[in-house]
Length: 130
Image 1 (cartoon, rainbow, N blue to C red):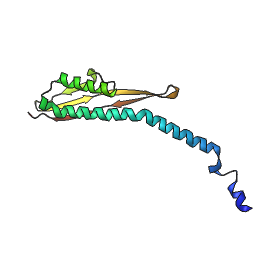
Image 2 (tube, helix red, strand yellow):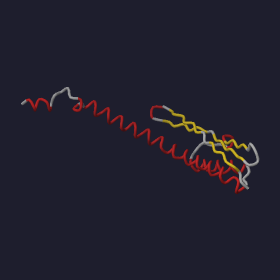
Image 3 (cartoon, rainbow, N blue to C red):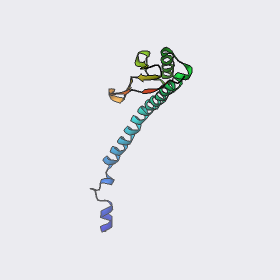
Image 4 (cartoon, one colour):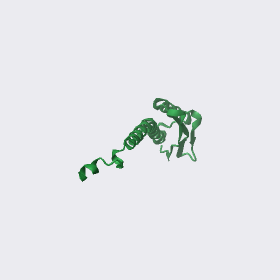
């Protein structure tokens, strides 16, 4: 009889339906936020790679600043990122060096009217070898 009382003791935490509801709610919330954030992060990483590629290929193609900006804006549109030409800054401190900086932010909207703004600042620099 002592063992039976231990199995149905009302104060045990793992038998509480409130704990199960809390854990379920927490799990659903984490999955929801991950599903909203993951695509934006993936697109941001791909865009960062595109910026790096433009810097690496700038010398071989002898690309102008306008061509680099056009390529990056086109890539951002493909990835669904809100990047404008004015968000891209290209500097050439000397004839053999290039720096490409991009600054943009993505706003995510969640249930209940909550918003989250994520700021991305990819920056790559490299030598121009002719």
